[in-house]
Each structure stands twice: as C-alpha cells, then as structure tokens.
Length: 216
Image 1 (tube, rainbow, N blue to C red):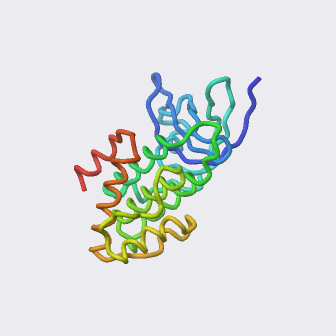
Image 2: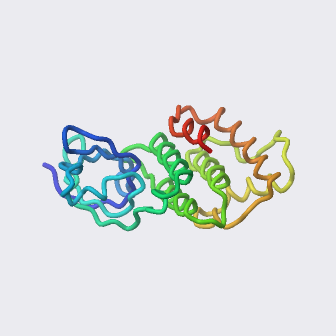
C-alpha cells in the first residue's frame, strides 16, 4: 500500500502528460532518480505550476505508488531563476541535468551526483567563473563519481598547470570545485582532454549538448 513520503531533490526534466498534467524526472537524496506525476500542474491556477520545472530544488511531498510517485506539494529551496534569464547558462544547465539523468538510477545512492549538480548550477549563476570551465569541471567530476575515468592522466600532451587542475578536480570535495580560475591555455587543454574523455567514456547521446555547442 502506498504512503506519502518526503524527498529532497532536483527536477532534472519536466514533460507534458495528458491534457493538464506533467511527468517529472527528479533526482533525490533518498530514492535516487524517480519518476513523479504532477496532476493538474499545467493549469494556470495550480499550486504545482511553478515547482514543476527543470532546475527546481527542494522538498517534494509525494505519494508512493507501485511504479511511480504522485506529487502532492513541494517546498522549494532554490528555483535557480537566474538561469531563466541567461540563455547560455540555461543551455549548460539543461546539459548538466541530462547527464545526471543518464548516469543515475532509482534506488541508488546518488547523493554525490545531486550535490555536484546543485553546486554546478550555482556556479553557472556566478560571474567569477566562466560557464565553459564549469562544464569541464562538471564533466570530469561526473566521470570520477561514476568510476568511468582514469585518474592518472598519463599520455596526455598537456602542460603542468593543466595536469594540476585535473588532479585538483579529481581529489577535491564538491564544495571546493568552483573556487578557481584558469588561463586560456589551461582552458583550451581542458577542452581537449574532456572531449577525448567524453568520446571514450560517455556513451549517451545528449541532445542538449548538440544545442549547447550550436549556440555557444
């Protein structure tokens, strides 16, 4: 028999469902990635209208069914509304969410990916670090969290500063990732390294990445 539970997480994607409903993909601390249906969320007078969008982070009060969850209400901690007025930042954000959706699973411990995604979206809203650098940090740390990336970086034709940057990303806690800047040379070499690693280790076909690279 189902019950109402509270989960903390972020909406990775939101899709129309039926005439007035939405289907959400939510990455949660407690249950990993789950599918949540929000009845009537597309009606203009719905209390769920504002919370059923990508990037929304908070507490979700859901009724647990056999194969999915139904959203009853939500307490939002962060809408990341700054991304709604920043086209480039939003493109990066959608890409990050799609990568998170690809890598995560229901009932898995996905706390690290949720934390990485949250901190990465926060970094997109700051002027102190370029969006492109945020992307390469996010991609590398995602591969490390999921055990899909070598961490010795042997055989790469990169300068010592780039090697140090890669090692810092691998070993640092997520809260410390977005605290530095790099030179144009290092940024260019990070682009080269992460392009190689995406081709070698990321098997997903990310539509949002195609849009991002076409627009940025």
